Amino acid sequence: MTALADLDIVSHGAEQTRRLGTHLGKLLQPGDLILLEGEFGTGKTTLTQGIAKGLGINSRYVNSPTFTLINEYKSGKIRLAHIDIYRLENHEQIATLGLDDYLDGHFITVIEWPEGATAWLPPERLLVKLQHLNDTKRTMRFFATGERYRQLMEQFKREAYGL
Image (cartoon, rainbow, N blue to C red; front, side, top):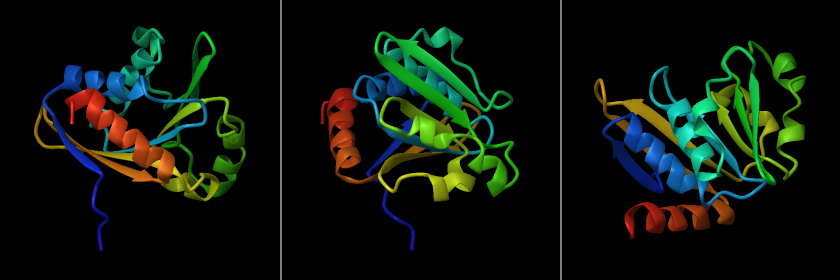
């Protein structure tokens, strides 16, 4: 049985995806964990750019950490870790990545391709599944696990949509 999403959104382009990320970023706190699932080109890094902007980080410098695995950004006291697990091939590689350092409550952590790392991740988090609808449109399905993330989704709905 497939779980029901806490929120379903259709983004009509990269700018809308960034704007939604900006709204989300404004609400995030150190210790928050955002997981992004989706095929190549669905907007995972674009959403992260918006999150960074919402945190006050110059999003122009936010790019995919596919080859570096981890990019860190800072704005004042806010620290963002953008992690990409796609290229890691086995549990040993994930185990040596040092995820604990980014999940210790000091960072806001965004992880792309988290499927292989679930054993190392806390159960409470916000999962965003992105999918292609066509060349420009994407679906974004938000799944909140834990009270912090359920409250975050309620705040996000108010911030982004006035609901």
